Image (cartoon, rainbow, N blue to C red; front, side):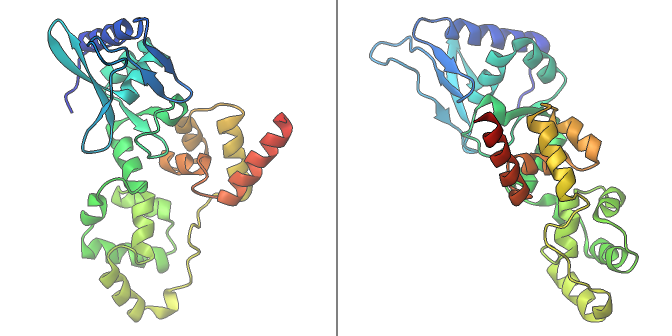
Length: 260
């Protein structure tokens, strides 16, 4: 992806504002729906195109030149143009929190570093798994030893090997590097207690507090992750009900009763 400098970002913002000021253009940030008036006869609105990765975009012309602008960028520009310029000029990316690339609601978009965006895509299963591929068999065996025999936590191993907690977990439960896991298990059966799938250092009480911080206090997910010392991607999956689904359902049901 080509990075734009601050001047180019400002030009993009002005381009979007110009198109959205047309009488037939409209938008709804809560639904992520954008309508851009067509300047060509016979068509009322411009149709979005989609790239190979599934992202919607528009080709907008200015002074005879075609400019490709992705729909999620348009939403963030319309929400706060100055913040968009600031974040993008600092090298940030725009992430779809749910992992659904066609869900361009403002509430489903956030600014992330390129690294955090990659990790989020990996955890959500939206990309290949090169992180695991970078862990060789010797390192995988060492992780198994340190986890089962020395009692080191997933978080400690994540920091030691500089890989996401989710990758460490896949290795210690045999989802990744399975041949090495099978060999270690055969040689160390007495050191292989059952691992509770989905286990983490979070409790139901702390998850309720996370949901409260996210939905009631409106704290950014990055700040919540720092507060509870967990990954931002873990917070993203909690606040969308993909983890701790029972606590999430309980929390949302209680909120609906209060607001009813």
